[in-house]
Length: 272
Image 1 (cartoon, rainbow, N blue to C red):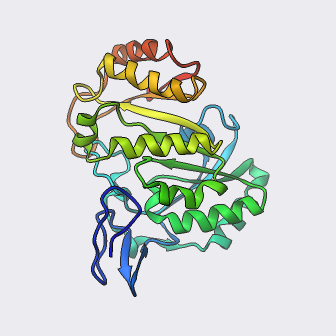
Image 2 (spheres, rainbow, N blue to C red; image 1 turned 60 degrees about the horizontal axis):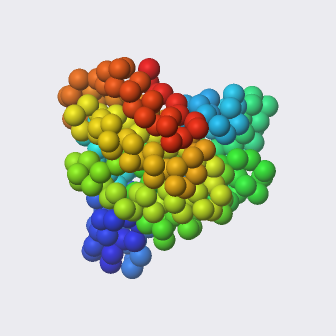
């Protein structure tokens, strides 16, 4: 069977696990093998999700599993995104997760954020939890690489209030470097915006890879073609995982920020 979740279209025989290490073929269907298996759970500031304009100053219960459909060489959460941690995870049902979110309202919690690994490789769990979260009048947030199919996106769109989506760069060459799909990511962003989800975008700047002023100008023109008010986070990279290029100079972040501000009204610097 072929998995429909992302551009990889993994063909899986019975019992096989996909590239993402989170989806498995079983009994004639491909589904999330990481369903409800939680590796990280924390009450975080909303700004830590890289959301500056969605309930600023609030807190949100953040939940992550394991697995990712990309292999970015600079992954900051590689311990959970790049591994199958089934034996080291804790099962938390949607009911239990939402109950915990409700119990934390007194501490300022506004809802649930699906984050840390790539949530969309476990889209079934995201959908079940987000639907229940909305039924209990809480907010839902998705932090994603945006490199999944519209088929997968449509399953969760009615239940998501806000997203931070990685727009990792703005060239085919860069997306090939990180093993991703440029057109699928743009389609994901466009569909999310058109569904009236609050979206903010993040671009991590890796020196000599995606720090071209021309590419940043093209990126921001494209974002502005959707809406110039969409916030963009231009974020400083530090060596991590397999990437050893030196950290992004602050001067580069400042230069790219000035370019972005020519097209967009809300530009934020990250990791400064």
